[in-house]
Length: 429
Ligand SMILES: *Cc1c(COP(=O)(O)O)cnc(C)c1O
Image (cartoon, rainbow, N blue to C red):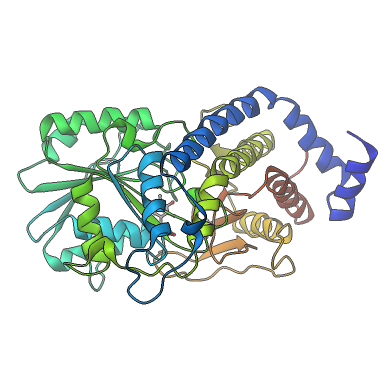
């Protein structure tokens, strides 16, 4: 490594031993990084050809106001999303405020009183507990008479096929499959495994709607859940598919009849997809999608780099440094609260925005323990940007993700380590 690189990292506050340790880890990752680049290349071509096929043009970057009728950009963007996901239709809107909103929309639009939702992969993401009514919440689906059932994964992470078969009944309307582990330490599901699960479920009940919470999974593999039978696939634009340029929003892709239901729920029955002003975001949503495969590749490199570093330091990491990746989240179990604070403060200190701020734990809405979040992002809460969250509870794990560029992910991880060394919560080997 050249003198100049060492020097710039030292100026950033990273001691030489930390940089050299990182460099040694990186030496073993060449082949992994090559494979990530290959997936990004395939995904880039998928996005590019979807844009060409749908004739994206300059007019798409104009905006609409008021009702937002005939917004060409919005309509073509939705066709592009549908093409990328090989789906019949898509709803891609800035009016969908976040991933939770998109998921709540898809669930509530496609269920009616008396229907049942099944999660065959254990407890869903924290914020969905209120949406479904697993935890009592105002306006939950439970209040509307939609019930919920859950089948946990087996101890080894396998699907409990017998349990799933027994749980499906005449009221089962929709099956919610969460691809990413979220704030859990279970493994993330590969698209292939999601396909096996969907095939099993459809064989028991062909007309059940299989919906995938695709948050953090987009462009990590060359296939998406809609390629393996998912009827609906849902995610956030301030995660992977927004490429760091989407200022807000969510997407739902899948079968036309189910996407249509979502549109009627988002606006109003009778209006559906025809309305919704685009508030000048069309260009950012197109450009973000275009960059997303490369951005996701950088985030994945960061996740693997972090896994190898912290594994080497003796911490438990999920997934481990050798595992195939199916989302961009890296969980590192640090074992004590001081280590979680130091890690997150290091990530924050490496941010381009708010780097001088010291994050503190707080009771974030939707989460059941205090959470410390490091996020020096251009867009509030954007977690395709380098960010880390640590719920302050056993086993004191941090969930690390994002990085608009690989270099930023790298310096963030080294800075997290640097902060942990300063707090004496770890030692270099
Ligand atoms: C982030 C996430 C959500 C919720 O998204 P928000 O945008 O934070 O509301 C849901 N499910 C999973 C798996 C997620 O990672």
